[in-house]
Amino acid sequence: MMKQLALVGIIILFASCTSTKSASKNVSKNQAQILKDYNTFVINEISTDKTYGLTSKNPVEVGGAKTKEGPLNERRYLNALTGPNGEEISYFRAGSCCPVKSENGFMGSAMLDNYRVTWEGSKDTLSIYINMYDSGKLKAPKGFGLKK
Image (tube, rainbow, N blue to C red; front, side, top):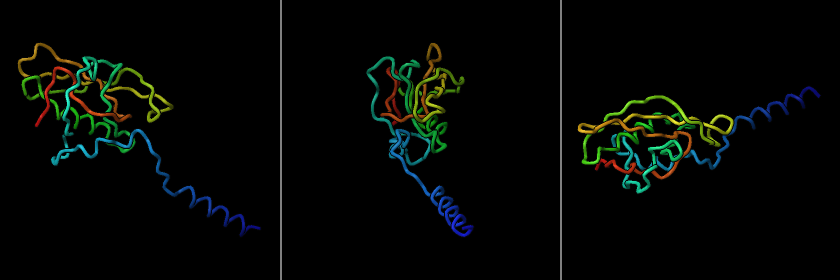
């Protein structure tokens, strides 16, 4: 009897340690979009939606939280942007804000990150809202340019 219980315990232990791959929204579509320098996404489109990335209701979805690359993906995204005339941008993380629903977040919700962005000649800094828990097609916000 003890041998049978020990065998069942070993089987349960091994079964619980096997990998379970799931088709998560967080499996980043962006992985194929990384430039050879590893720190910048390749983005080929500027959004026509004036709210994309610029409001908390329509954040940029860079993914990567489940693979521990969320903050890196946020920087990869921002590193792909320029000012409207190709100016180099500067940015800083202003903090987390704005809870959103996300099956990839903690208990079905996540927080967005707010980055403040500016460039030489800009009149003010702009906020870009980024979701590192979910992945979507990456575009530059309206009014920004893209690195070549």
